[in-house]
Image (tube, rainbow, N blue to C red; front, side):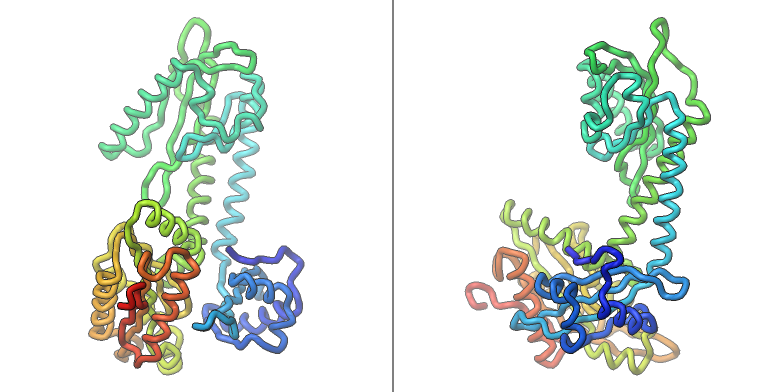
Length: 422
């Protein structure tokens, strides 16, 4: 969750911070929460809710996103914020490209007499043009959100099930872009049955998984079934819909990734951690959190520049992937911190894993600008159910353990005491 004021409600404090951060893009700066910062109603609200204050702006010819992130102390109080400016010009360019593609698609689909539609990975209709109303008499608002199969008769649903089964067999053979073609009876608003021909093409996420279909439906002649290929206009509609879908997925992925390390970001963690914890509670298995931070990171930046600091963070992100499981969630949590969510892992295994990372980093040679940068890390660990059963409690115990690791001389791993005081 973030607090993002709608334009033009950017107050004087935000404008001043914007000017301050424009000269330091990509650099996180800790600031005490006092003086003019306390005069910003938006920031005061964000601090009260313990969420980042985020807004967009322009710096010369670049699109920027600004963040003021409240930083709780071990006692839970917020006495400072971290300011960060991020260049999002490429993301904004992608959004403009997406908007242009959507406008082109709307124009092409509005000219089509055939029904043009799109469904998500659960077969729910997310788009359908007006041709469906003219063909079946069903208003668009009554159709969006329904399962595509609900538009067909029982016989039609059986046909679709067979088609999808063949599609899964094709996918298992590595054929991921097969266009589906079939004929089946639909139900009109007045109860009349209508045989239609359906052409549908899958679209995929960056992992290659099918996340939806784009399709065209047309009525079949009463005395025969149409066998011809899709017309050029229909192919163009499918192409543009696929382009839009891929752009949208790309934007969603960019919004959830840290551009420096390629790991997920704080926003992704905020979305997924509560869900993972809920699943752990429901199914009764342990879940560990590991907070890792680079020791003396400020000194590294001062001695080797921010590019040197970036090299250290990239090296650490690679080390964190040592022995990674598919279920693990790696996120860049702050300027120098990474948080790892480890389902099905207790405190002992999490401590052993963090120790592996600590030793691997201390023994690594991070090369930058002809120099070898010595690097160590500190880590804190907390787990469900040992240290708490809700998000807030677990994060608080995690931060306390991390704070003790830093105060205890760094280059060490500290676990939060369990309920039994271990």
